[in-house]
View 1: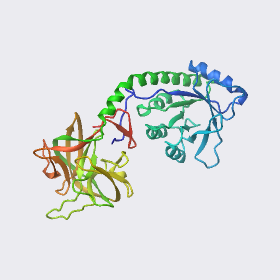
View 2: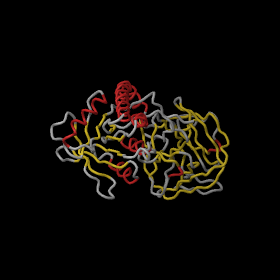
View 3: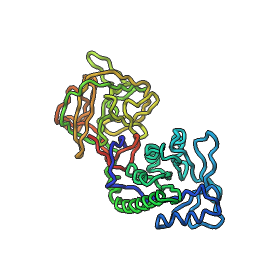
View 4: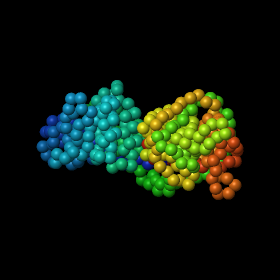
Length: 393
């Protein structure tokens, strides 16, 4: 399903699954690992789910053991191994762009990704949010190093999903005690919210049926002058096809391709005049992009009014200042907008007098017209679908 960049989220409603706590015992000698683990469990006031080590303990531990292989010079990642020496994941430096890219590329092909950090001064939330959005609805789970108590809520509930595990150093001082206390509270909250969110997850799946619906135009207003993006594809569009474009996370309008001959302007059957740079367009893989970010080689989903869809490759993006119209519309209780160039050659798909669809110039659209739109209840982070509440105005 389509979705948009999540502009805001709330911690009051969460579908985050239960979260694990890992003890970061990489600095401990094998003989001291169990004593350090016991210290962590006292601070967490409950068992720890796994220990992260560089040398296996001398006695059987009461939790999972994860061995961190050394990271080779200039390598963006290192292996995570189980006690049998089998790779179970990778470790990546959260502050290294190459490490973050390698982590995101590994999603789907490994069980765990550990996003690591060793400096509070340079550690930010952005890498964790980016990898969480990619891991969502894949078999890959994400563990993230937390260095201070104030980081815990953000990591535990990022994008209303959160990391699957927090990696914490032993509580050797007051700051360490506070870190473990915050993590234990967050783990309990995640367990409660996962149980409470289960019924609503089923409702959301039903609401997310990948179908087009009808939106009613509520206003047609001047939109000023903006930088309009025309997407020129490497293949020809068919009559009835267009791209799904809009400003709202909940609604994208079907904007018809320039496949119709005009009296003064020839057809451009390879083009969708998609609107200004801030708008989103649905890609063929279900993600969205700002029009400003679309590049040659990207695959865009083109769809007709009956829902038949296919992927077309962008060959050129043509950006020019043009006068705009803003069409506001509502569908299924949600409000959306689409800004489009004020030109007779730019068309949307509407329902006619009966159940048939027709193509209408944006300059002829009026309040009450019924647009063909695509509705979703999901949001995304960096264009990827997530189960988070999104509000856009």
